[in-house]
Image 1 (spheres, rainbow, N blue to C red):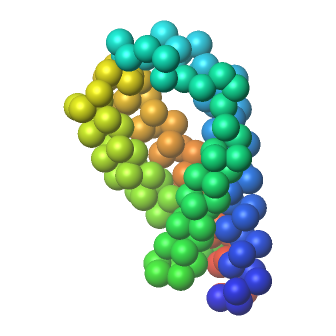
Image 2: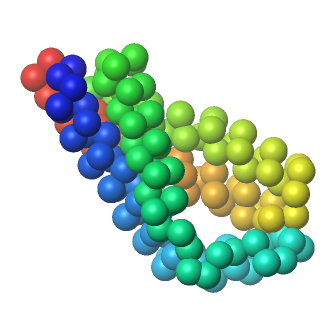
Length: 137
């Protein structure tokens, strides 16, 4: 894959992850996650550090592009969506259940819903990455 196409795809994937994440976590499910926080207090930053979220989403978009286009070499959209979903499912189960087991940040319901949300989010963006990088193969 051309390096310019890789960079453009990774950046666009990050923008999609940021937009979908913001729509879900800050709008659609904000009340749900607020109601399902653990007993830890003072953990939510108001306002959030959007530059840091952007850096995290850029890392996620780059990893997704690397795995789909560089290692798995799948495409078009369906292949990318499958890889994105499996990748997110395993990563989010790892992160959320270790966090649940070691802290009081969120309850088990929130951890399980977060796994579903991230699996869907990465499936959608993985489909986009597969479409972008699988064209012309």
